[in-house]
Image (tube, rainbow, N blue to C red):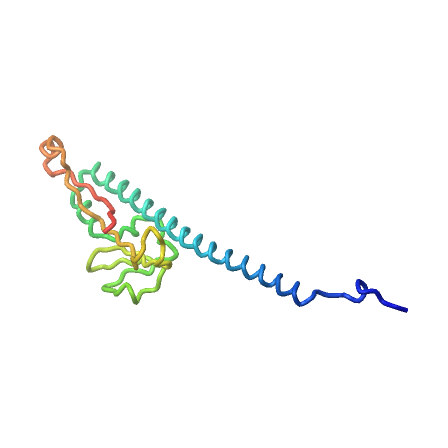
Length: 167
């Protein structure tokens, strides 16, 4: 009894296995490079959303203080941590620190430098196109005086406002 070649071949040949592994390795390399780019984009979006929330919270609180004509409250607010304005701290908040070298802080976290009154976000992915070469994003609450002369003359105190700016 003779067995035909088709009946004898039960598995893959070495060539078929090599081709399959090559195709799978190319596909995985493409997938992982794209996945890393999506992680960087996600980090950028999360940071932008939190900054927008802080700016909105700051504007609302300043409007409340302006309505109550509480200039001292506005001046005090200019010295506080902008994350205190949020309902709760983000999960990646590292806390308030006296002084820090950005190189030594873990990436992907927010810190408030008390002495400089500076809010920083240490980047996880430092190769982002939008922020090439930066190790952190820095924000500070800036005190603004009204540029409207009529408003300044109509009140006993000049109109003050605050803004969270990138520095």
